[in-house]
Length: 124
Image (cartoon, rainbow, N blue to C red; front, top):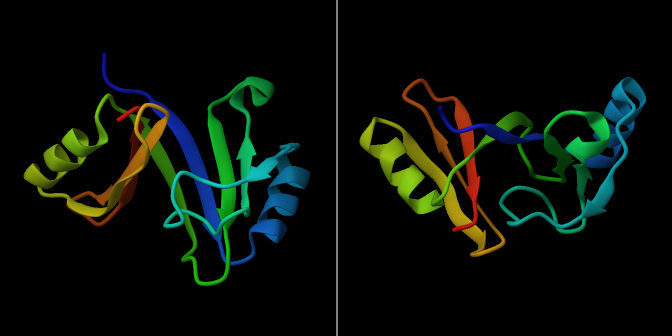
C-alpha cells in the first residue's frame, strides 16, 4: 500500500476571506494559529480544519499578503528529507524544507517533473 494524503491547504492573499468563503460553503470551522513554517502561511494566520469533525483529512486555509495562491496536498512520509531527495532523484525540484519541529511535524514541498507543487509531512 502506498503513502496516504494526510493534509490539504488552500493558500491565498486574504486568508480571512478564504476562511469565511470555505466556512460558509462547506461548513468548515477553524482553529487559527501558526503553521510549521512561515514559508507556508503568515504567523497567526492559518486556519486548521480538523478532519475528525469533517469526516475527511486535516487541512488548513491560510496565507497572507505576499503569499501566492495555491491548493496543495501533503503526503505522509516517515522522513521528509529522504522523500525530498527521492523526489529530486526522480526529476522533481525541491521548493521548501525540511522545516518544522522534528518529532512533532516536519514539512517539505517539491514540484513534480511537470511543475505541480506537492507537499510531504512527517515526524522527521
